[in-house]
Amino acid sequence: MTRPLLVGVDVHRATNTVALLDSEGREVAPRFTVPNNRPGTETFIHKVAQQVLAGNFDAIHIAAEATGWYWYYFFRMLDQHSLLAQWPLALYPLNPRLTANFKKTYTDLDHTDTIDAFVIADRLRLGRDLPPPFHTDDRYFPLRLLTRYRRHLVHTLAREKAYCVAYLYFKASEYTHLKPFSNLFGATSRAVLQEFASLEEVAALPFTDLMAFIDQKGRGRFPNPEQNARTLLQVAHDSYPFPEALQEPINLILGSSLRLIAGLETHIKRLDATIAHHLQSIPQTLETIPGLGPTFAAGIIAEIGDLARFNYNQAKVAKYAGFKWRRHQSATYLAEETRLTRTGNPHLRYYFCEAANSVRTAHPRICGLLPAQVQRSAHPSAQTRPRAHRTQTGTPRGAAADDSRTVPTQEGLSHLNACPTQKGPSPSRVRCQGTPTARPTAPRPPNLPENPFFKFDMSPHRFLFKEVTGIRYQPR
Image (tube, helix red, strand yellow):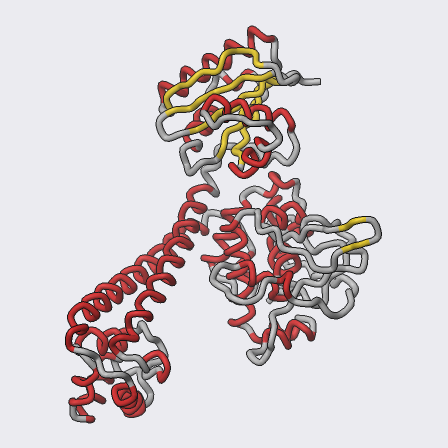
């Protein structure tokens, strides 16, 4: 039986505060603070090593809250240091919510760095529900930074477009309703909004000149520029008058916003090319799924990393992504509707949702593999989104179930509700229908690489198509 030294570290930008405990919860040394830099970490390492020798410990367990990235270089240096390599070392980056909830079990504790370090060490001593230990990962981590930054840019772009549309109403109130151009933020639409102070100027142009302007800005790609011109004139006729006093500020706002949108779109395209280049160094088969490109595949692979962290258990990956419904039972009562936890990795959940939606929209033939209820719910005339069905025994889809569970008939696209870019009722607010059916078996893709990451029974194909979308996989 091991006797580890338990170390809790409260990480900040400038300092790291440390508490040392044994397995009985007794502090074995006074709490101390070191700078959060290379010399400070060297001091920390030597103090911990001295305490291990003095207390006759045979392992070292260190936990810190994953606050921003302030913990990363600290853990990376600990993982690679030769002095600590003499003993078994486990490094745990804890979700701050985990320690915050654990702190509630104490009575009237102050909020100080030294107390927080002790709470982190005591939570480490409890040992339950700890994340996978940290290890230096130069294969997946760079790709993870890129895909997370892309998600940030996409959300920034969505917010800026919504902001721009709100101010566009001042200049042309019917522009978004009549839609003279299919892409509101395309090159021709931007030219109309930026080069004309008001739509009255557009209406004053000769019709042939307006058609020529649209055809030129569209580089001859509009099949019927005459129809676009007529719709634009209809927008000018039906919109409220644009007051002269508002023209200068609104045109300045719209011009700046449209330039920012164009810049963000350019950055995202460059980032996609960089992500695809990094993905080439990682053997993977996700791109063999119809409709799934390198960007979404990279997002899923980068967040999952090495599947050995999850013992190749698809239920653990589903829980890590936040695709898990809590079970609510009391005596003979078993709740039929429970909420999605959404406490897992939001980046992995985002890329799972986006990938599933990409497959659904890009390849309509995939709908033939979906249960009938999902096909109806995916139709634009559907009144409600589907909710993941729960089996008659109350076993939820995802991490809480084992490999013998049944497949819901209404799983499908319900997880898209977990995606921040999707809107609609929560899965817990839609009444489930149907009965569970037999679990389908997925055919093995040909020429699967001999790599633990692609162990078929626990491969990302299964994660994406069985655990997330409910779509049965068929190789090309």
